[in-house]
Length: 174
Image (cartoon, one colour):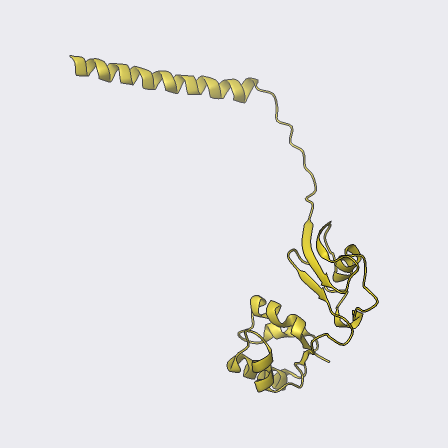
């Protein structure tokens, strides 16, 4: 008899909890205040670091989209008189997490000319490019003519976005 009583009590509690949930749901769904949903345009924030020959090196955050390296340089107080502005592509897009280093005059690293470099040089000078990819770059150039822009490296079999990101600032088509 005692076991039968526990089952009845447990069953009664389950029914009571279920009814309470139904009442609570309906009281909020029907009689509750309407929700005020506001649409706001998303804000894009880009955080980046500027080092080297700028007046105020540091980490900055700018609001907006379609930002460029020139915006980063401006945020860092502009170039010093010792900066090499030719070593930067000021029109390049600025992305979240970028590190922009402004070299002094004469210290900018040499870029590899992908339209004339031999496979051994591409292999030796570019991170993530081994002998196989270096030869594919040369083969692509020979089959399709000179690269018109460095973005065309993405057309070379085996060069994906991550490899391209590693080498894009180290190469030129000039």
